[in-house]
Image (cartoon, rainbow, N blue to C red; front, side):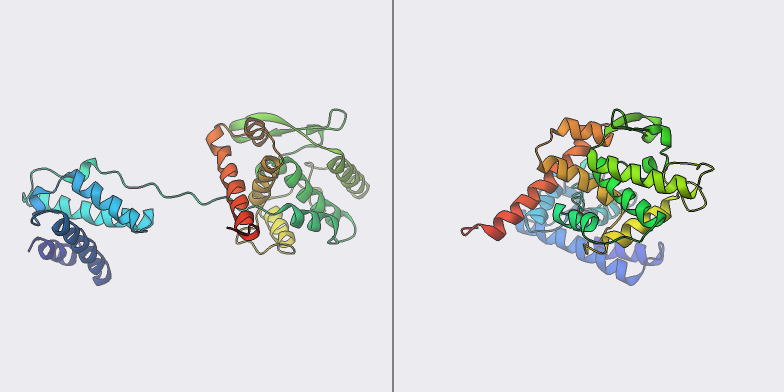
Length: 293
């Protein structure tokens, strides 16, 4: 039998584990069963791309995830490469097969009420570090900038007269992000406390107690530590606050193109993922609140 010859090849020549071989056997028998149900007879030599595509559709309609379907297709690809080498088939039907794309997970974000609780109700440490940490959280939430952009900020990049922050993004591209009164007050307070403690100047805008520019892991830890006070999200990183900024803007009717520019995305497609996140949130609210949902 062709399947058993193939499995012997995997076992003896490729040294595959028994668990892997069981998976291959299951996948190939599953496809064989599909063929027997849809065709008059099972003939591996007569299989063509349409048979495989129809099987893919039936798997997806049966609730199989894209990763599972792609794994089964991988088993079939290996099998047909084997048959081609053994000259059992003249044409490989898998060459024209493209597996389903894996669904991208929706971005995590913090709800507005939880951000307000963190910034307005939960106390931070007294002095320089507490003020700095709160200002960093406010900066991420109010501007949507990336972690690397925040670390790279210098005093000259913050223009209080025009209320604009100049950030340097990916591939050195610069953009301007406006900021409001609340962030302005936080920034002024932070600068005052920082300069009193470090009158000799600093390396960057956000710094450690010794005046050195902050580093990525330090900021990652402070964000995670503080977000843990208000949410139990799996991810609690600076990037989650970037997602939170984008989601809040779109929820408050900001234009997608404007959000794209503020985030520094090159493509609108990248920004559109946040519209899916807000739509999913709306669906949840509807299902929880509507009497006929």
